[in-house]
Image (tube, rainbow, N blue to C red; front, side, top):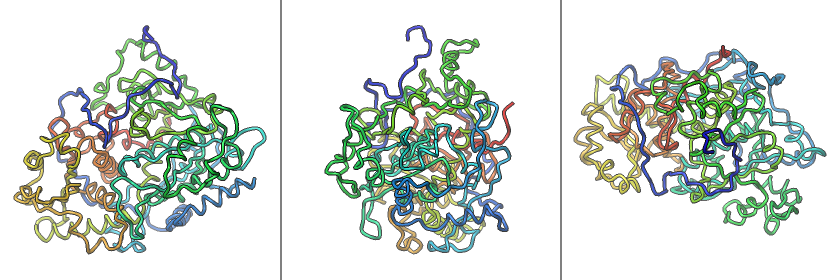
Length: 617
C-alpha cells in the first residue's frame, strides 16, 4: 500500500514469487551492508574438551523414560503405521506423556505445556551399540541436546487431540501437512524438514513424511540402496512418540486413511479425488504422479520468506497486524528497523513482541499470519519444493518463523536442538574420528596435550566456478594462515575429489581427510559420512567454512550449541569461527540479526539464550 501502512496478505498469494537462492541454483550475491567487525578474540575454543562430561549421574524417572527412547527405531515406520491403523479404526492413539496445563489467552501466561523452572538434563549417547567409542569421555563432548520433559507436553492452541488422534469426527476434519523432499543435497533437505516439523507442531497438524527417494549426491548404503527417507538420519519414531502435540505418519498411511477412502477433495471440482490407480505405495518410485495428486487436493503454500514473516499469534493476546502497522508508520518515532541496527545489540529473548518483531523483519514489510480461518479452511496444507516459483523451503526456520509468545519461540528452537539431531550412529562415527584425530595431533605435537585440531570446509564443485577467486587454493591458504599456526593438524571436509589440489596446504599444515580413517569407519552407512564430518568440524578449535553453503552453516549452528553448553556464552558470538571470504570472514565475531540470504550462514537467534526460563517483566 502506498501509504506505508501494513498490508494484510494471504499465506497463499496468487502472484508469482522470486525463487530462493540456494545450493544448486544460479547464485546471485546479495549486497549486505554491515558495520566494521571487531577483531577476533581468543577467549575460548568451541572445540575444547569440556570439563563437564555432559552426562548426569545417577538415575531417575526422566532418565529411564529418555533411555527407553534411545533404542534403534524400526527399519520402517512400524509404530507410525500402527498408530495410523488405530486412527483408521476409530480407536484412540496410545497416550503420549504430557503435562496438561490450562491454556490462557493472556500474553502474561505460559502457553500450553510450557512451564517455569523446567527440569532438564543433557541427553545421552550409546556408542557401545554403534561401533564405539565405549568410554563415555570419548563421546560425551559431542552431546549438546537436552531432555526437557515439559517441552514434550507442548500442544499448539490449534491442536485438537480429539480430532487429530482419532480416525473420524462428526463435526471436524483432521488437519494434515504434506511436503515434498528437496531435490538438492542433504542439508537442503534438512532445512526443509526442520521447517515442516516446526510448522506442523505450531499448526497442530499431522505431519506426513514423503516416500523414499534418491538423494542428490547420495551414496549406496550397506544394503545397496540409494533411496533415503528422513528416518534414515533422524530418530523420527522417538520424536513422534515423545511429543504430545505432534503426530507423524508416512505417506502410505496418509493415502490409506484419507486418499482411497475418498476423504480428499479436489480443489477445483469439490468432489472426492482418489490416488492414481488407487496406489498408496510410492517408495522408490516416480513421485511426479503423487505430487500432482497431492497438489490437486490441498492448499499449496506460495508464501515467500523473502517478502513476509510467517507468524503465529493465536492465544498470545497480541495483535501482530496492529504491531506491524505501528512499526511501518513509525508510530513510536523510531525509524523502520534495519538488521544492522541490532549488530552487537541483540533483543532480549523475552522482550515484548514488538521489539522481537522489529529485529526479525530484516527489511520485510509483511507478515503471513496463520490464524483460525486459515486453519479451519484447509484440511491439507502442502509445501512444494519448486525452485522456479519461490516455494522451496530453503530458508532456515529461525529466519522467518515468528511467535508472538516468546516462550513458544524458544520452545521451537529447543525442539530443533533437542530432537532434530542426527542418529546416534552418526555421532558415534564422529566420536571415533575425533578420537583418532586427537591421538594423531598429540603424537605429532607433544605440547598439544589435549589433541587440539582445526578444521576447514572447502566446497568446490559449482562454487569453484561461481567464486573462482575465493575458492582457489592460494586464497584459501592465505585465510587459513591468518588464524591457524603453521604445523597445526587440519581436518579438511571437501567435495574436491582431486586431493592434489591441496598440495600447497601441506607445506603449512598436517592435513587429514575422512579417507584417512577407514579403520574407524567400518561398515557405517556412507550417507552418514558428510554428517559425521560436520560434527568433527564443529568440535575443532578453529573452523573455516564456505559462505552460502548450508553444509558450513550447520557446522556453525552446532558450534553455537557447544558454545552455550561448554562456556555458557549467550552473546551470540562464535569465537574462532570464520569464512573463507574477505567480506564475510569475521561474520561471527559480533552478534548479527537475521538477513538475506537466509540460508547462507547460521544466525545466533537459533541458539542464543534459548533455555531462558524467567517470566517477562
